[in-house]
Image 1: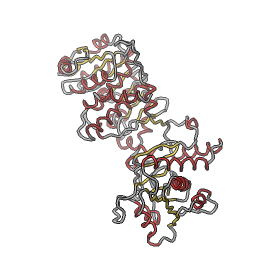
Image 2: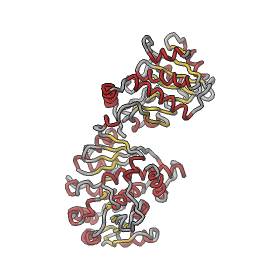
Image 3: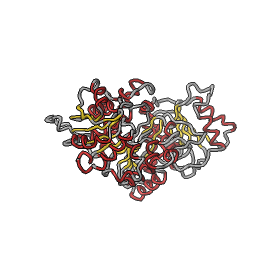
Length: 522
């Protein structure tokens, strides 16, 4: 599934029209999809519905939806704003059915609009489409103020549900900004592809439930677009297989380098997550102190004790780890390491020796390992290609040297350009996590969940990633599948517990549940 800009959507529609899928056909499909989405969620027969119709194609979609809703038994009223109706086939179809029509022009004090709203259970916003980007003013602003269910109307109890055609009027489909007059939707029916702005705030909070409707544009027309949306069906196809004849060697061996006396929880969370995602053997390379603490809670892991100094991994631990890495399939470096001088030297020496073990071909670098790397000039030259780097915005700023706000304002561009510069897979954590590849492709994960904003959540993610790599997934596939699994487990935790109070260990038992749910889609 591709995610498109306004201009890309315009080009796709134009190409479809040239290929024989006319604008009239696309409009018919769009309007019918809106009506079908409403019928699937609300009672329609004999219900009063108000369709707000603007001047462009978005208004045309609304007219088609109004016709279908009428034919399904709804009592539909049209309210036209700046709509020229002469020669308008879809408007003529509504009039042939006797659908009541009101016009903003001549509606003194909006008395007709107020009356129509008062009796409606559904209001359909088909006023402005994706191409609108000017401030909403004048009559249109007054219409939207009256329609907004957040503004009390003593004669409307309860206020009508708002259905947005393609997007709520005033939402910028590229930037995700909202005009102050924008009315948030209860349901948004968008067409062909999701829009870039849907995954930015505040727009993401204004869409309500939203669905993507097929309007006849061949999906392959969008193949050249570089921004992708991860979907559950696609993730199911990428999951590692689980043959009935398998044994622990079949399902891979993961080595995790983590922990210090200050951070004993991180190695536990990463190792437990790697086990929960189905890894055959999980081994934790850490200090003796951390080993004793983790072993008391995680009985399934094995250990490689590393030399330590003052509670952190010592500089002379490199050879011990390299010897222990024999026969391992994947490597995670970073959770809870701290930034002691000896640990920094250990990391630099370890990465300099990456050609000595095949496990480095599937490496995750997380947390303090990223911070340690950021202190070196051109640090990426020390890494094998296609590691999975897992920065949040602060770590990204340290790695790139960019300002945090500049990164936040241009997440997709920053992730793509630096993935290419560094020749690494960049899993840029946050609301709507991005996975960027050196090829220029970027995949967006459809999760924005405050329940995951808790210490240790990233450690769980890194453990999932190394576990999937150990089972044979490529770094790119592991990053996408692992990020999606982590997000799905977070949604299960939020649904079970709430959006506050979830702790990282709550995610662990929900990883297998998320796996099972995704497999059922395959």
